[in-house]
Amino acid sequence: MKRIFCLLIFGSIGILGIAQENKIKALVGGTLIDGFGSDPIKNSVIIIEGQKIVSVGNQDNTKIPDNAEIISTEGMSVLPGLWDMHVHTMLNGHADYAYWDKTYPPLLEKVIMPSSAHQLLMAGVTSARDLGAPLKESIAVRDAINNGEIPGATLYVSGPFIQHKPYPGTEDFRWGIDGVEDARKKIRKLAAAGVDMIKLIDQDQMSMAEVQAIVDEAHKNNLKVVAHSHRPEEIRRGLMAGADCFEHTGLSSAPEYPNDIMEMIKERTADMSQGPLFWTPTVEVLYNYEYMRDNPEFIDEDSWHRGLPDSVVTDIKKSIEHSDRLPYFQLTSSRRPTLETKVNQLLNAGVVLMVGTDSGIPMKFHSQSTWNELDVWVNEFGIDPMYAIRGATYWPSLWMGVSDEVGTITPGKYADIIAVKGDVLRYISLLQDVDMVIKHGKRYK
Image (cartoon, rainbow, N blue to C red):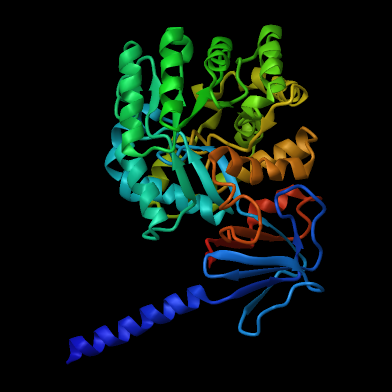
């Protein structure tokens, strides 16, 4: 009888929880930036039922249902949940890759990657592209989030990097290819496993035939290709093969992109039959390094501890204790002055920029990286705040092929919504402390 009683009680609690989750919500009073780029809606009203948005308007033209839970957004900017288009959930800011790759694989699926995804969510990032991690763990964590088993940003995963030859000790998440047929075989294996895209790197070390085979086989399997773009020939070959998005603002300390690459980019952006040319510049990691090296208070901000055992937190802290000595960043002082020039070259050539951060690499925490990238775009490079927000909302959802589900605050789409106190178009850095996070209609913060 006790067992039956407990089952009835906990069953009732479960049903009550579902009922609460499906309750109609009304976000009332804030200034709405819907993601499309038009003028914000003042005194906005957003009605959410279950996981979806059912109506959007203002207090004059939108009726609030009598049974709605009213959530005041007065004095707040309300906008779509952010996307980060370049994260590494298998990493958490540790400075020693070789040590991390040897020590932490057993914790990736159950601890490290879920922690990263949860930190992203609580920072207002409701969707992210995870570009490079072991295949089994990538699929498992993505699906656990999608099934509601663990909290986290919705992940779109590439699984392992595809490259000419893996670095020693990285074979589980970097797959080498040997010839055209092997390239096609590896892409088919990833497609069959259910990845969301392909991550291509070091393509300048492959034959052009191999690069073309990777891109063609990916497209044949309805997968887009994200191309690493640090070296000139990586960019050239990616463009020639028809890669769908380019990552980073590389070329080391070279002051600008070479003329022949810019001509190739302009030729590509002129051909709208292929749609926009997308680029994720990931500038903040280089732009802010020297400041963060000299002002390490960001390490003491504990949002990046979420989901991590104390032993791992201590290990990460120890690895970045002498951030001035990290080989990873020694050339940064020469690279930093080139970043704005390269971003402007891309913008002037008609490229569509998307927000991505390389979050997880040394000193870059998932709870901090995305707002820092937006801040550099707007406050350092002078990019229009609305452009920057669209680069973290509308355009990523379009690139990923899910713009009918998320990316803007529109009736019929999932309620992925964040809010901050104040005017985010005037003060983009307000995003460093997101006050409200709703994902698929559920309020997490």
